Image 1 (cartoon, rainbow, N blue to C red):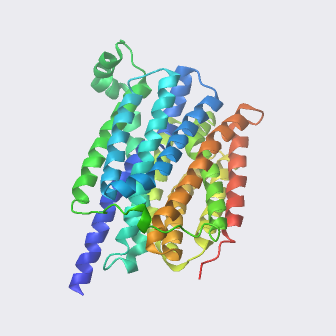
Image 2 (cartoon, rainbow, N blue to C red):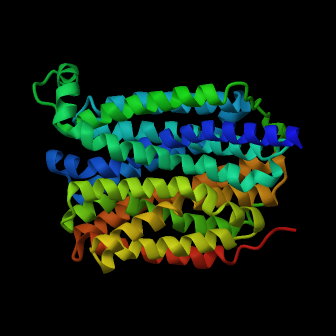
Image 3 (cartoon, one colour):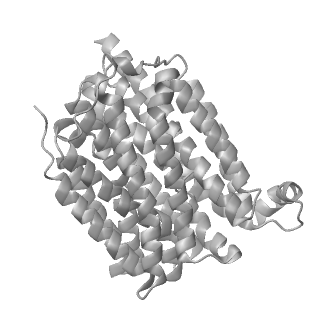
Length: 410
């Protein structure tokens, strides 16, 4: 019994280390953009469509990385792939703060998407393999929840550090260094924030290296892998496509919407911290649901809750409604990602896990490519961002219906 307890604690410790990769690849490299977007739009004179296109390009990079991931995993140790993705995220985050041209920022958003796919999707596969180790079967839902909930740590960190970096204290600490790197006397506040995000990513990657020390995932030749039964998982894939389309509009534009509705900077910081805390808490909130159900019920339930969370800020700009929206959205959205890993793990043999997770990663990336531009184009027309959020909520509701039709495989 003591041995099982020790093995279980070791698995959870390793999962927490892997969660730092999730914090970097999504929490910092992708979702911090929402905090920086209002300042970048004002400084660089972007339309909503251009602002959304930045995240579309990031998702395109994620898709490119997802397509390359099986090849990388067939040649290199899986942990090495995750580490390389984390290093790439650090470098691209730093470069975000040292450029101003739209073309350079598009290129960097694409590159950070490639790095995120290596780190995040690769880490998801490592987390799934942890659940196969002795002592992991009874904790599989929690292990996956901890990994994906790590994104919340990144969201909380950037929520606290970005306002500091963009304020007078950040200007005093970083302004001269960024100005020297840019060759200008007055770097923008958002540029300092990207530099701080790069520093956070560096520390998180060092923590991940230490906490996952000794973990290996040797490359598996393609000849020893099996294809996943994608036709039988079609409703799960379609539900996940709708998730990718719908959730990314919220995570791209929610801070911009709330600023337009008149919420103060401290309230916005508290909102994003609450959202990040919700992501961390989701590890425990939905572990049982992911553990018990082999079919599409978890994804259907979670997509439905996301639709509700997305429409709440449209129905009311009252701080109570806004905070309920953030807490609900944060406590749900990364668990949808975890639900796809659980679906593959429950219904596929281990040799088919790489192809199954790759398929869900690719369909997710496709949704994220279209989603930000779709919401941006709708927001540039009559009705503004509120209409864009309604479109996202409808797509998420459709995803809930589709996922509910996914049955467990025999």
